[in-house]
Image (cartoon, rainbow, N blue to C red; front, side, top):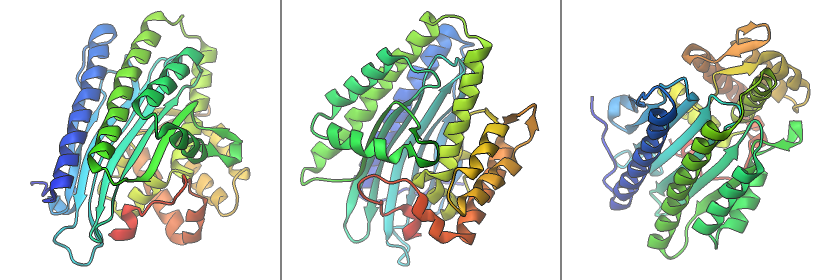
Length: 346
């Protein structure tokens, strides 16, 4: 089986860029595993869209459980250049989440994508956010300063959009502590746009590797209280991803060929009782979705393990909910604009 890639020169260039960024992030994380963990490499897993006819991708998954709670670094490209029924030409992306095992080390989420429509419109989407269970203000400041240096002209708008996108109305709080988000970004200088997108992600990869290494070598011993705070935060993370994240929902509604990969950002354990308590905080009909998510999990003393089988069940629940309640998509998060998502063009 072979993935057929886009023929557009700009899509090919974007694929080369995100592949290089994937290699950079995996290399930095494997170096940390070598230094403080079990010296285990990330495992590459390939997936195909329609048997590769419309592309697919490779996600690299963390295997060193002494360092990582969960880690996924996914590169994908879907393309419909030869399908006249689609208005999407191609979408090329790097999307990653790293959840460290240590509750005093923050999680990070990164996304950069290049989307081309057959109308000629094309744009970047760039996201970087720091997500600690227990905040270290010095790490937050370092992360923010790195973003400001990488994109000085865009950072004010990106921080404002990020804070809006990652706000959780039902819980009256943000998912993380620093959120950078550019949606539908393009200027007349295509080369400068590409350079900015790569610089943001590349610089944050190096910044996060330093933050993570520092946390794993200098933080005090973890306690049961730390672990409980991490489990509560991981519950919030899952809640935000599955009830608000527009990119995740769009991916699940488009197809069912990469459900486990799309939900690769989910942490390994959550507090099922806490998740269940939030169903009364969301507007109708979203309480049905939260009830469905709880039903997918098997609780042992309130703790739920999120394995691949559970991810598959969660994906089906989200997909069926929005098919039943399409207007509920209005509750999804957005920045300044609602993107012309892939799902609108397939």
